[in-house]
Length: 387
Image (cartoon, rainbow, N blue to C red):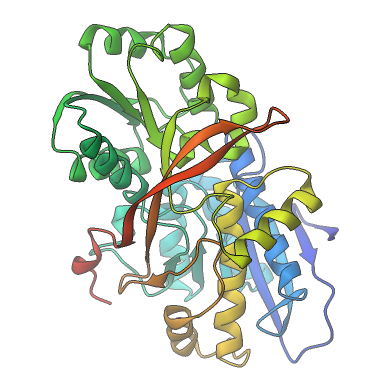
C-alpha cells in the first residue's frame, strides 16, 4: 500500500499520484516507539488508509507524508517540527497523540503559519483564550468524552465516585470534564504519575473509600495495567468501573483481556456506527492491517479526509493561508462518526455515545454501541475563543 524512503532520520511515505502543479507535504509527528506507540501507529495507519481512499493524493495534489517518531517527548516533538518546517517545507502537521506535546509544538507552528490538524490531542488551553487559527482538532476537545461519562453516571444514579487520571494536561481536563456533568459526591480526586504501571496504592485507597463507582482515565499501557490490577484485586465485582473510550480502545483490549469485558465507556465513534463511510473504513482497515480499527485509527482517517476536502476547496493553493484556514472551517466530507461541524474555536460539535466492551463469537474483544448520551455536543471553552 505504501513505500518507505529513509531520509535523514525521518521516513517519507510517498503516495503514487499523477503529476500535479504543486506537492502537498504533511508532517506526521506521532508516537511510534515505547509506551503509547500503539496509539501513534493507529493514527498513522488510519491516516494512510484515508490517503488511499482519497485516491492517493489529498486535495488533488501529489502528497508526501514525512514521518517522525516523537518518542512521547515534548523536546523531540519540537525538534521534529523545526526540522520538518525548515528542511522539508511541510504545509500541514498532524499525528500528535499527547496534549503536552501539542502544546509544546504549537508556538513553532503558529509562528511559521503551518496548520496543525490534531487527530487526537485537544487540550483546553487551545480551546479557549489560547485558541489559534492554525490549530484544528478533528477528534474532540479533551473534556468531551469524560463529560459524556459524567452525564451517564449521573443518570444512572451513582451518588459517590472515586475518580483518577494521570497528572498531565489531558488527565486534568478529563477529571474537570467528568465533574462538569457529574454533580454527586466525589470522595477522592486522585492524580497519578504519567506512565505509572503499578496501582497497588491507588487500589487500596479505592477499597478504603468505599465509593459507589470508579471513573478513571488512563490511556495506553497505564490503562492496561490498571484494569487488570483492578480485577485481580477483586474490585470489579464490588465497585463498578467506568471510563472514556481511550481506556477501552481497540488497541489495548487484547492486552487487557476479559478484565475489560462488560465495562461501559463513552466515545464519539464506534466500529459499529451505522453509516456508509464507517462501514467502508472498518472493512478496509481490517483487510489492510488485519485488526479492528481503534478510536485513534478512526481519527487519523478523518484527519486525512478533512485535509483532502479543505485543500480541494482552495483549488490546491497552499500559499493563501487565510483562505486555507477558512476552507478547513467549512470543509465537508463523509466522517466515519457521522455528522459533525467545527465550532468557532476549531473543535468539533458532534454526538457522544455509550459503548460496552463485548466478546465476539471468535473471542475477540471489541466495543458495541448502547445509547447516545449527547447530541450535537460542543465543548465548554469555545465562548472564550476570540477567533
